[in-house]
Image 1 (cartoon, helix red, strand yellow):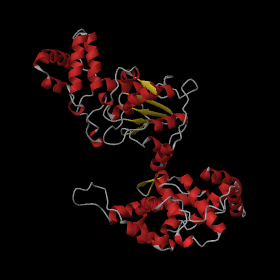
Image 2 (cartoon, rainbow, N blue to C red; image 1 turned 45 degrees about the horizontal axis):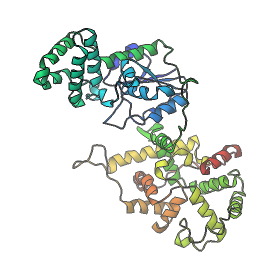
Image 3 (tube, rainbow, N blue to C red; image 1 turned 90 degrees about the vertical axis):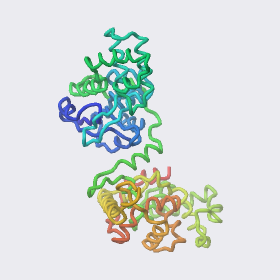
Image 4 (cartoon, rainbow, N blue to C red; image 1 turned 60 degrees about the horizontal axis):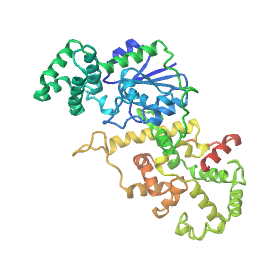
Length: 465
């Protein structure tokens, strides 16, 4: 079993090692991080800290995806408590006082756990006090009879008025109006004698429970609410964008590998056509009658007489094609194209999705990324470090028109025949590869082996289903 812990300002990293020695420790979780994890059913993902403003936060559907696969996901203290309070009916486990406050609706704002903190290399040192810590400390002060309920409510309102970046006990003292000054002084003086870090305590509790294999940290089960409608276009797009492998010092996403195969493999158009038509005909991709049977399906549905004439999927130079070829091209383009934002490995023709071809595609993408960093770096003005200039549209078009052996007027049709819905989608995927093509020309990708029939019929149907 593998334990993965996302931690930041709530707890020092060395405490994670002491409480849960064999855990894989990662920085605060952000959108996409869970999709990169190499975890399986039986593993545990413990979410403590997460990003709110610096990066997009972890999405609920990313957590549900892990739960649905049998991975235990538990949260506490900060982002983990917030997401657990939202997803506990579906099997995410929550631990600690902060989680309970969110779950019971006492706390509703995510700003209550937000803090300003230093960079990772400085241990995410906190520079502000989360409001939830102040809230819990006020409760403790009431229990210790330092404050009464009304006084605690006044101080909580005063702390809430401070922007989360400025919240601290010292800021409460400095900003207190005259009528609250004595009350704030009494509370803060007591706090300094008996400090309490609610978020840190909850983080330690979660790690200790994991170390003890506490039954409360069990996987989602039949007693939890079913997870329905999980696999949407959004999740598929996120998975393609974030899942992948490290190659040549670069993280290469599945989307980038798919782009290489769709744009640069010379056999992609032929296999793409065969797969789309075979799927429409309901036959295997290796069936030599696939095109004829797809055409018969079109005729049976009355498409053969309406598709060729003046259809948007045909260029002006294709208007003189015979009706059969015109129908087949329209079918391939209408049922086999997808916008770039949905680009994923499953959209690559199944015979190209072999381990050898995927490994080669990732290497091309990694090399292209290295070239983009060195050939056209952004180093002046107010450009962000690590960003780069991009090739102009006409450069992208000319580069790939030459590569594919067509003129720029025929580029859109060539892009359609590789699965891209329009020139904008093609250019978005192709631009990162221009430097590579200019430097090395077409890559020497492995040839496609003839697929086994049982491996390809289901894939063909799925692509056009």
